[in-house]
Amino acid sequence: MAIISILEIVYILIVILAVGYIFTGFFKFNLKRDVLEDYTKGFDWGEFWFVCLAASPGIILHELAHKFTAMGFGLSAFFNISYFGLLLGVLLKLFSTGFIILAPGYVLISGAGDFERMITAAAGPLVNMILWISAILFIKYKKHMTRKEAIFWTLTNHINKWLFIFNILPIPPLDGAKIWFTLFQLVF
Image (cartoon, rainbow, N blue to C red; front, side):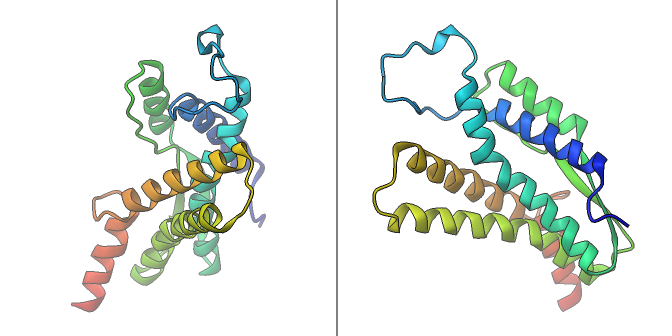
């Protein structure tokens, strides 16, 4: 059995591109020093690729943490894209709502018991917490950052903070519901 299939790699690439598109222009920053640059001339491909690099790791690593944790328990796990989640995110971007709902993918896991389900669910938000704290530490302690580095770590900070907070909420079908409800059942 392969650790990750070709189809999963294709899905990951689709998610990366969709996330880059969704977040392009969402944060008000200028990667170039020329503040008089006119942004109405078209799509900014440089910002798109930059945002792909800053925003996608938190989402992709979150889902892969679920996958590899489940596989560590000997369970079958497959990363899948959420067509509805991707379409909703893209439509919110197209209509310039200024609001992001991002659920571009999920991991299908079979055969998990309560404990395995709880630990597997916690793996995703844990990755976001680690990335969030790492970004805070880079911002605080790294000396002489370039402008792009500062923007990268600031985006990484904000995106992973919100991914962690959102995913830890005890609201189904979020990871937090799987964590807190299962923990409550195991304790009581």
